[in-house]
Image 1 (tube, rainbow, N blue to C red):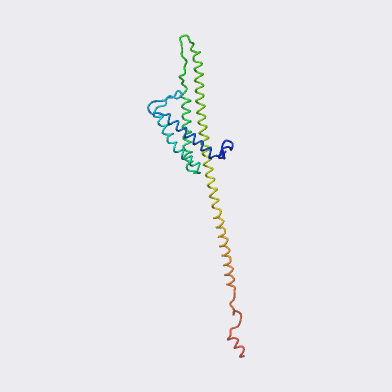
Image 2: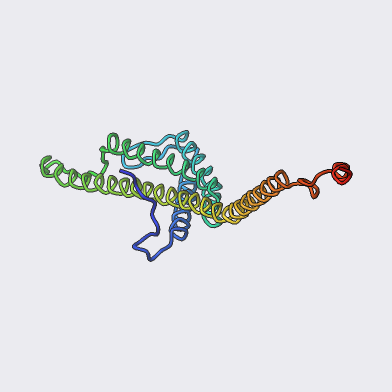
Length: 230
């Protein structure tokens, strides 16, 4: 099963170039949001997962690297440069791997929830733990939902970038064939003309070989005088 490139996006209402430019804009905004959120001074707790300053700096460096790559890919999509999209496609694959990694971390390690109602000595622990578990379950479900949305968005971006890359490659091959056709026609005409000239030269050579001299078949003059003397 071969996945065909997308000719357009959103049912044909948006061209492939415009869709990929929109993806680049959203990706650029995401990188800026991540850069503005990380810090190197203290740890940050997200959905029960404590993210160290070193990990925040690593994520910030990765998304900082993505800003010129995204601009590079957007320019490649606008001006039909296949190599630019190849670089952006690799970065999208890395972004998808980062999203999946964080999703696994949040699902496996982010189940602890600090949302607990205030207790009194007369409260029943079973009645207290039940609403707290419901709140934590909703929170974890929303986290998983948004991570799945980010992963699907990364896959969609990869598909659109790959489709644009394939479109540029096929268009380049078509243009090369279009420019190659006049030269092939000229070469074919030159070969036909050379073949006709060679055939004409061969016919002329055969005619010259079988052509007799003007005096061929007549007796020499001395033999004619001798016949007259007798």
